[in-house]
Length: 73
Image (tube, rainbow, N blue to C red):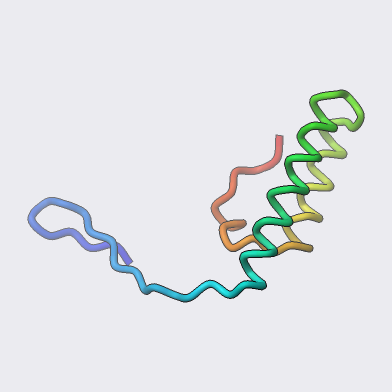
């Protein structure tokens, strides 16, 4: 929740511990996307295929920041 005091916005947040399992999911997602981007760059897949696989990766790996990640290409 954001709050404004003295004209300066503040952000209230709660620290939550991150499990080893969640960190592994984040890392696996990162690696999968790196491979996918390389495949796209080398014309091994189309933009449409990239977008479809990215959506599947987000479902499979459930990265914590998926909600704020940019949309597909």
